[in-house]
Length: 189
Image 1: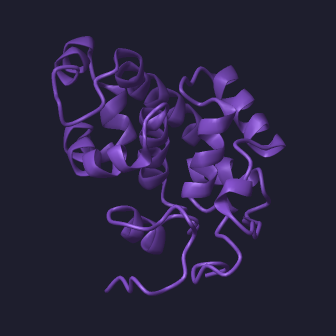
Image 2 (image 1 turned 60 degrees about the vertical axis):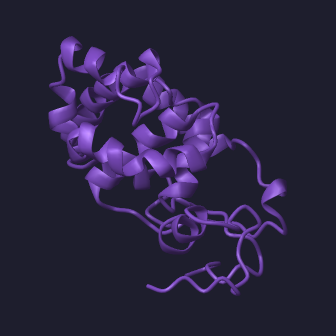
């Protein structure tokens, strides 16, 4: 798909790689578990950093985190995780790197319990995206009662780097919440 720089977009999407991410992914409903796992890990890695940083490292993350196959990441041993901490192609934060394995294991438990992570996640909204139309992305909240509830449940299950703010960004990324600004060409697509 050719990215048209003249289209009206959300105010945060003004240069690559954010333009392509905005136009092709952000706010679009994701129902494939591997992709849901990828975005969960990337949103946790992004905490305290810019999303641009993560987008630029994303392809390398896919490579070193086994294509974000949760079963493979769940089997990473300490030695593998320690090696990843030396890799400049990812965010080398010990807690975030080790959280990927922990979260993969919990992700698999949720899949087992609900038959898929998709069923678990989208069950929170009766499989219908929450639609908002903020005038500006600056008006968008950092968290909501929905992100609070999902965060609390994931933490209770043992996940880390799933605070309410991270979960709200995750919900936006995978389309559970559609926060495209009013007037954005992607609003409601």
